[in-house]
Amino acid sequence: MEWETVIGLEIHAQLSTKSKIFSGASTAYGAEPNTQACAVDLGLPGVLPVLNREAVRMAVKFGLAIGAPIAPRSIFARKNYFYPDLPKGYQISQYELPVVGRGQVEIELEDGETRTIGVTRAHLEEDAGKSLHEDYHGMTGVDLNRAGTPLLEIVSEPDMRSAREAVAYMKKIHALVRYLEICDGNMQEGSFRCDANVSVRRKGTEKFGTRTEIKNLNSFRFLERAIHFEVERQIDILEGGGAVVQETRLFDPDKGETRSMRSKEEANDYRYFPDPDLLPLDIEPAFIEQVRGSLPELPDEKKHRFMSDHGLSSYDAGVLTASREMAEYFEQVAVAVEGQAKLAANWVMGELTGALNREGREITDSPVSAEALGGLLRRIQDNTISGKIAKEVFEAMWAGEGDADQVIERKGLKQITDTGAIEQVIDQVIADNPSQLEQYRSGKDKLFGFFVGQVMKRTGGKANPAQVNDLLKQKLS
Image (cartoon, rainbow, N blue to C red; front, side, top):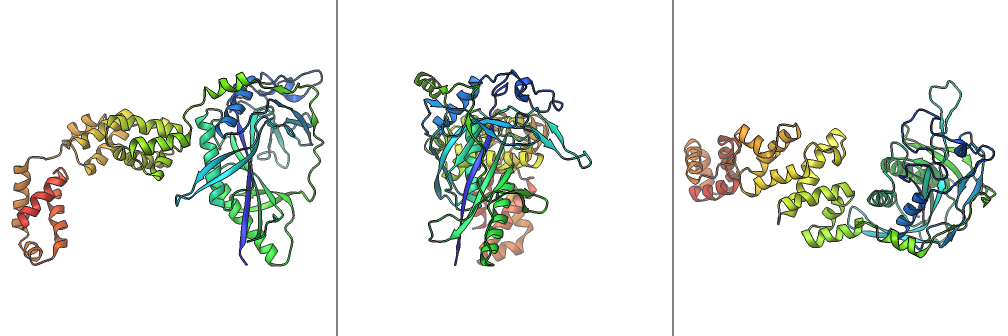
């Protein structure tokens, strides 16, 4: 019998506030260990937490973006557990009454299939510190700089049925929080990470199987690999007559496997109770409307506009709106080559993205600006250069050799559009290849490409390809 995978994700997005959620300590990344943890973060006697208004605004912004209700009153609770990097012995979080209620997001898979994934809730909480295990020779170091950093925990419904759906959902949330400018999405620094709840069940059954939770996945690739391994592991156990144990597991990217972290045979008793130091969070309708008015054009809206305004396919529009920066770059290029949005899309998704990936750069760090790329594409439009020569020009621009016009002029790359000059080259090529000419005229049409190649070779690739094709057809016939 076939098995069905059931996946739910708990995504932790670090909010881009300048100070922590309950204190004025800095949230800047990269400071020396334990230099950004104040008395409030450490939970010292006599201190009181004060809620960061900007963190609330960002949570509301996210809730509105996924069509979720915003709770007029939500409660902060203490989640009690012991961990070396949790100095208070409890974490301030939200439990029964979160600030953001049930919403949903739509994902699109590689084959164009769309799925709607439910979001159960999104709640505010503080992050814990960080335990450091390397270079301590059997001991553990604790850095409390991260303690108190504001998090928005986004909990999905168990609506995903494959690793690719889970990755698509995580990418969609990642794009959304960056569009909203509430999280920088930096996965290497831990600003965006998730826990994956994975189980399997026989196809056709309604009851969920026993789930395991894979903690702290900080890359899309790790998420996919961890789910694939865990699904196979659980199926092997069940088909061998065993039972899956409810537990927390960690993914080892070097070995490509998950390993047990701690058992969860029974739900942990965190002894949640309302934090006596924090009043209920009351959000006025006017505040919600103010936040609603600040919402940018969201990824789905932008995608549909790219399809309608620029005539792009669903796939192209999806790629170009995957990040706010990519979408803005494309639109600037599209403006420069009015009426040729597909040309702009092909170059942004092709040459530009390839060069960025090759050097591990972000689009905001591209040596070729959107304006400069638009200038290059205009030279293709007006037949100054061919598309093939344009790639050579782009590489020179990427290397800092100037704009398109400067590179074309300096390297003598202007396209040959003089019909007489092209005819002379064609006549010479035909004269030099009598055997191929005879074969072509006897029915070997594929040799037409040979003649085109010879003409382009003799002109250094600078002859206008359309003119070469037209003139060759006339001459060879």
